[in-house]
Image (tube, rainbow, N blue to C red; front, side, top):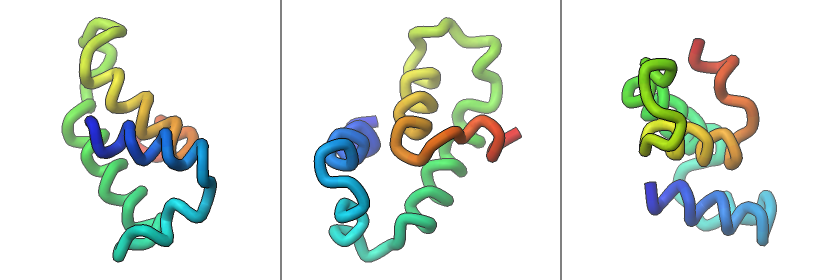
Length: 72
């Protein structure tokens, strides 16, 4: 959670230059985090809105765009 929140904050500040910091490309980072959301948050409708799963999903969504259509 901390990593993706930090990345989202840095993305808001630095934009696409953020991805230059990593060995993995933006697409690879997105694949990884979408996979986490898909496996960890596959039953969000059964979780309270403020749950850590919703927070994680929302943060990944902030970083990579509308992820909900990608994981359904």
